[in-house]
Length: 285
Image (tube, rainbow, N blue to C red):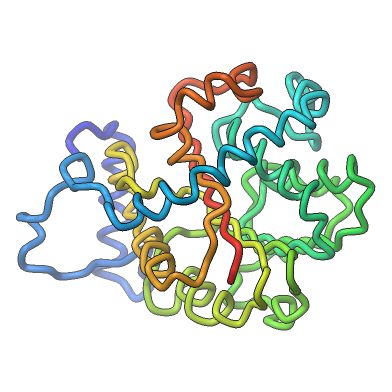
């Protein structure tokens, strides 16, 4: 934490004091007497059980990487695109993440996409719908999208998912997509709590689930330590229940399948320095 810029330290102090001392908290404080003995992200071990699952799914990931070659012309057009088209010159949803959002949408041809947390990912989904001449109904839920999506012909519900109409999730059927890129905080009553404990269990068999900012089978990167993310601990528990097929993991591909990524179409796509590729794609059994 000492490596944080001064501006970020002041921001954390401001939010922390507001959380501890006022009636309008800006985060969470969890007392834990052994916190000082808990290793920071850089010192924590990886998740061997999850790694074993991803090792088994590696042939599936390789197949998706090969299939992406079909769409090389589309990918080439994203190089210098301007909004609202997708582009590679951003680190929010970079290279492999954007690639697979496009590829899986084209291949699964979903009737509906419900996206929690919108922005650059939305642009990749919409472009896949457009290029594939799909009739996909696209419903995005986000109080403040990271990138401007107002020009896209989709439904945007500008609120947190806890306040959104829950009926939208009941419209999802097999091969439809639920895409999650929200707060990444798994606490009672948060969006992640609602999605993991209520929405995902009710999805039908065959539903496709995308969760972003997942670095399993490794821990979150040290540079993210200040964010307090804990969503992937919930993802690890979901995977341990063996109720999902792993289709793709950008984090696994960039760390365990480097040689394949280097020989694939991805090698020619711009990746901003310091960008983390973190999409996890699952299919409910």
